[in-house]
Image 1 (tube, rainbow, N blue to C red):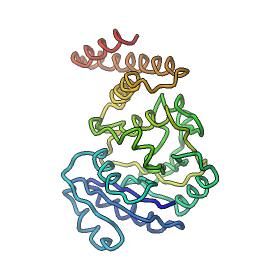
Image 2: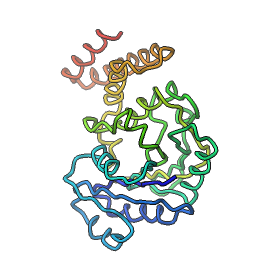
Image 3: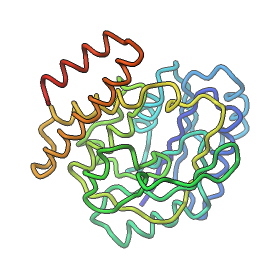
Image 4: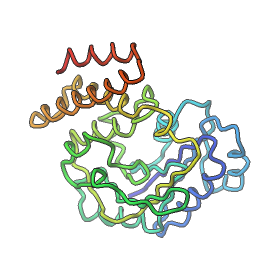
Length: 271
């Protein structure tokens, strides 16, 4: 079971070395580490130079986190892929525990873990809505993204069938991918906090975009895909309509006429 680790980075000089070191300190070492520098304009390149003998570093024009992850996937030499966002960290047993569990449950092709949240260095509690599940978890993935990319290990064959991260989505690209995967594959959950998700005053996609809008787009894709299990079609439709109505209320509050027109067309189609 050989693993390629993919770390996308854009202007994260203050974090990317810490993220990389958390991979290098794994008790179960990965077989390959790929950092995709997505057009950084800070000190990212110079800080990574000392690691060039341990890491494959790919530089590309700034194209977004999905494109960076996809570049890493295409460059990966091994069949198991693991992702780490450049502002997150792995605990030392992360890969070890996933290898152990996937060996114990060989029918699973994707596995994720629980996570520790920290904001400005302080512990944060997760809400009930962030509860995580194992098995056929498609319905649990509908309300919001419960799977952190930094916690995932996945077999390449899944992405060969499902497709890669959607580069047209500036946010919620992970929500979109997990929906597509969980509709067809069971997902193994390890209830151990094996990664650290960090938040603070640095730019993050979740702060820069309306997540509801891109979740709606992902749900429309699912409705059009024909891949939703029959028993979950109504749940998907109900979730889409609810999100559209909530998003429309926000658009009405801020007089966003174009967005209201777009949402009305979706509601006329699906409601």
